[in-house]
Structure formats: C-alpha cells, structure tokens
Image (cartoon, rainbow, N blue to C red; front, side):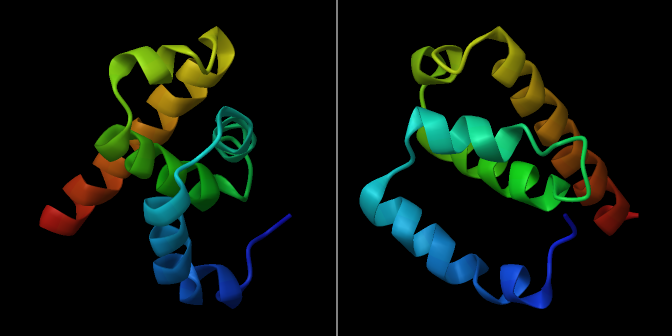
Length: 86
C-alpha cells in the first residue's frame, strides 16, 4: 500500500513518540518487513532510528530475516544520502 502525505507530515510526531516510548521488537519487525514494498520509507525511517538507539545485541534479537531487512533499509538510506551529496 503506497504511503500518503500524512506519513511525511507525521514524521516528527513518530520520532518524538519513539524517543519517549522506544520501539518494540514486533513494531520494528513489521516496519522493516516493508523494505521491498512501496512502503519502504517506513522501513528506512525505522532502520535509521534503530541504528541510532539500539545496541547490536538488541538488533540481533530481531532475528536473521529482519536483520537482513534492516541491513537493506540502511543501504537505501545510504544511497539516498549519497544522492543528496551529489
């Protein structure tokens, strides 16, 4: 399902909520699983947050499949940043 404009507008509120309450493994897995869909911005936003707030041990708790989704989402973030610098 494609994302609507509300997704972009509510980014600051999501980040604040994550800052206050953190992220469960389940919600992280659901978000990261969208990396290969039209909802990939959900995965990249979550991957960025996880990379800044979770230690490696917590990331490993996602499980092999979702760690791979996490890795792919971070690669998309890096590609986008590289484009912005070009």
